[in-house]
Every structure is written in structure tokens, then in C-alpha cells.
Length: 250
Image 1 (tube, helix red, strand yellow):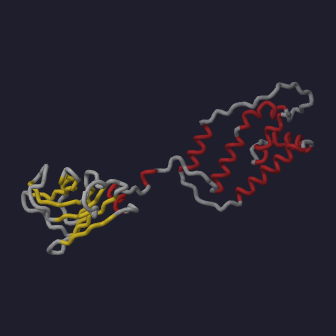
Image 2 (cartoon, one colour; image 1 turned 120 degrees about the vertical axis):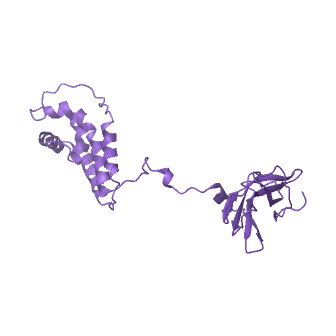
Image 3 (cartoon, helix red, strand yellow; image 1 turned 180 degrees about the vertical axis):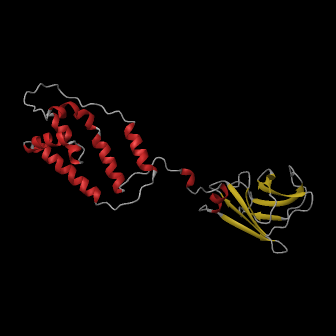
């Protein structure tokens, strides 16, 4: 195969200098294979140019060029040949075609950037910008979420939502009055064979969404008690609220 075949891509995207272009066009006149390849490449470039333009991010050009500069092109494997029919104008083409081969990829990348036809997801996308559901939100939006609500005197309310598939429960309060001085609201899960097991303390605040600790899939109910500051290992008072999970007898 002649060395000129390697220049089809560079010629199609106008990446040859004047001497190389003139020499390649002389070769092109007598090579049907190269003419077909050039026509195909030019058609593809025309289709890219017709792609709806989209403004790429400013840093995309710098990243593409930096990536190209970091690629070490490998020379093609060719059988050395001694030719006597090369003119003075053709000789630079033979010597330098290896250095031009990688320009095809560079030119293609430049066309894609200029046309806005970036079809892949940028690897530098910032995943942290995507919305992530909290553990509490996953329970509230679970397909099998079940809700139990209670109203308190004075207009306060509380709702416990539990999901057996997630093994978790969440309590949502509205207008909850603060616990008495020196006391806290403590959450519990009623576990078969164990009784009330601590599921955490309620933060201070009227409106709260709190994820209970413990396995809600095995619990038969959730409760709230008023406990000394710091909480208790077991309830020291009757629950001010009890949320039945509707599992019947354990």
C-alpha cells in the first residue's frame, strides 16, 4: 500500500500543507480507493456540520486539546520500500506522514467540539450536583410505605411512616411543643419478645423529620415517651403517643 493512503483523513479535514496537498491530489487522480475514502470522510464531516449546534462548556476545548497532547501516536506498521518515482514535492509527504496520522483524530475531535455534537456523558461531570435522597426521604417515598397519624391537644400532630422492604421508619411532627424542662422526647419500637426498644431521641424543634433506629420491619408499633435528659434504656413513663403498625398479635 502506498504511503499516500494514510493521508486520506488528513486531506478530508484540510490538515495538509500546500506541498502535501498538491502531492496527494496527484496521487488521488489515479487512486480510486483513496477517492472513495475521501468522499466518505467528507460526507461524514458534512453530516456533523448539519448537527444542531449546542454551546459546549468553556472547559471542554481545553480538556480535548490536553487529552490529544497527552496521546503518543504509534506509527503504522509498513513494509519499507525504496521508490524511484517520487518527485521532490512528494518526498516530504513520505517522510512526514507518520507525524500527520494522529491529526485525523485531533481534527475529528475539533469538528465535534465546534459543531456541538458531543454525544457522550462528560467524565468530569460533578455527581455531587445530582439530587440525592436522604434515608428519611427514601422511607417516605417507598412503594410499601404505611402511615399512622395521631393528633395532640393544642393542634400538634405526628405521623410515623414505616417501610418493611427498607426495614426503617420515620416520624414527622408538626407544631410539637417542647418537652418539659430537663426532659426529652424519646422514640421507641415495640419488638416482639423484647418490648419497647429505644429508637433514638427527638431533636428540639416543633417540626421534625426523624429516622428511627432499629428494625421497623419486625416491630409491631412505635411510641413516644417523655424521659430524663439524655434518654433512658427503657421507658420510665407511659407513652404520650403509640403508633400501631397493624400487624396483629405477634
